[in-house]
Amino acid sequence: MKKFKEDEVKSKAQNIIELVNNRDYEKIYNDNISDLIKTTVTYEEYYKSMEEISKILDKLGKLKEYEKYDIIEQEENGNTYATIQYVVKYENEKAVYTLGFDEEYKLINIFIK
Image (cartoon, rainbow, N blue to C red):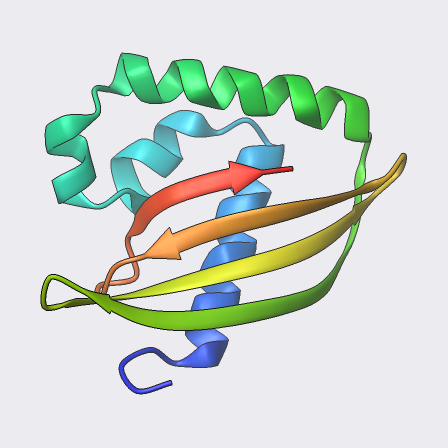
């Protein structure tokens, strides 16, 4: 990795995952999402996608532990991004989070499966 610090990406990802599990979507949007994303995605649109994540979380049960992760750094249109895939163990099964960050460690996307 050139521009990103592994520990910082990992820590930021865990922080976002904690906020997701606490359903603190407003804090994620206000404090953690890239300004560029905010210009294209309204809070209402973002909230709808987070409600879908809530339905997944309801089935998973309680968060037990963070397992393994993999970080990829990539360049696109002159910008560098970090993508982390994080396997998280829950009560009922495991989930894989994919989180993307810009160079300021602001969230640009989040997926869970």
